[in-house]
Length: 316
Image (cartoon, rainbow, N blue to C red; front, side):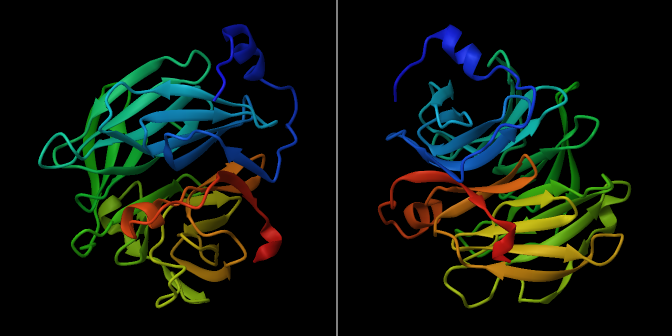
């Protein structure tokens, strides 16, 4: 990966006056990272890709230039879910150390997008496995903990961490429990997915203990028995429709109630295998092809190159 001089980096990431024309796919060139998380900054029209192996966060411009945004000196740290708080110019990332201690130890890192400086290091309880995160309109961070079936509420201004809700999820040994998370378009609920078992929960922020499992019709949620759907991973709202990504497919949920608890499901498998995370970019859905399931769970070599790719709404 070529290194860019600082003035050129600044020019590449300067805010754009109008929406940039994004490509249908971007190849990731790093040979040392196994990517996992994906986020998009609407201010600079750049993607962020995190690495579950390799200790890096990379940044990709609309024309495909790729640079290292952050490289961690600690080799045992994995970077997972990522989210951009565009209003506050913050990139939030789940950070997990699964090797140093007997139990996984998590932190949440915050970075100022424009200066690339790390602004927050917020430790989570031990054990914990921070999987994914999102922010609300007030800048509060909500994170899923795969080590315990908890949704954590993190106040960056205080550095405080509280358990917002404990969800009824008991994954099998070695399986991932709580995973993707997003805020409903009305800002009143969290939608939270579990990989094993495959479930989707609607959690009201005003009364989180009154969570319910989302009821679905149409295609079976998580396509039980289909090897392309080993368990739901990242989720993302585009407008009022929620997209759920799997290793070999994507499902679109269209809700029919005001509480985000009943939805019809449509499925596409016209995507590559190896998908893990989703993000909205200029009103369109993008996924990262990172091969995490193949590498971590099947013990196989990844199919290169890793990519960020557009998922067309016409596929559903």
